[in-house]
Image (cartoon, rainbow, N blue to C red; front, side, top):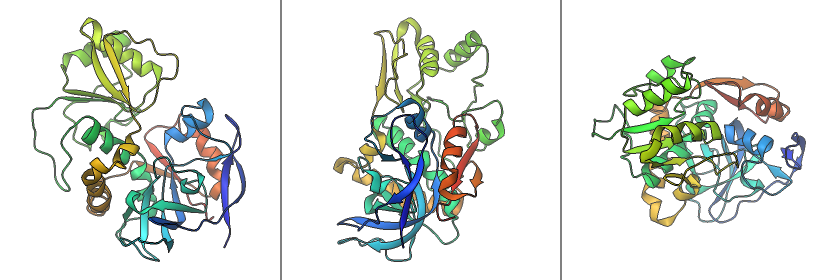
Length: 318
């Protein structure tokens, strides 16, 4: 049994396939045989734009699903052979990253899967869920979604920028999530700003994309009154943000790991993810599966920012 990984050896380089350490799980750790890597746009943004500071050589990838190979001391929630889906341990190094055949997972950052849940569905669905739950439930203080059925209206008006990265082409997919209203981001700029303003004021605004063009749209929407919003990326250097607009960034998955947020973390990994995947409450986007194992990683990284409405997955064991 040997490990292999897709290594990013320096900033903005292509990944290279090479040997990786076979890890021994420590206290609170689980060794997972990775059966499905779920790709996230942040992986490509880190590789291509150095969007977040990392150390090199690096193994990227924040979510994966697979089978428990070994459990470390004091691990009680899973055992050898269990099927799990994992969100990377915040602050974890290469050993916890997804782009490899075997990876470590923190017991606190994994969900045990029902036998009916496909690995690919799980790895594709969890890629953004941890971030979204931490941002909306912890950072923004919004009500948690139900484990089944539709949430009752509570009078809160929330704007999600980038709820789907291409509304015009995938409106039906967005409608399946029962939004109150959908605004097409491809509208001419002035029309888009007018549409956004007409549905406000908002109790909360969340930017799920985080790039400078979206920042510019939100700044224009807030106008002279100003306002604040939460976003998924730190500043990239090209934003023009007036003093009356507050752009709030946090490492959202790290929030889940804080002791004071243990109730949200346990609800997310022990209830929301496994039950939501099993009962259809959590529905992954349409999946594109690449068949050449780790050799497909660079191909996916080259595509993930331009192909919308899809989730890429790879089985590194192939």
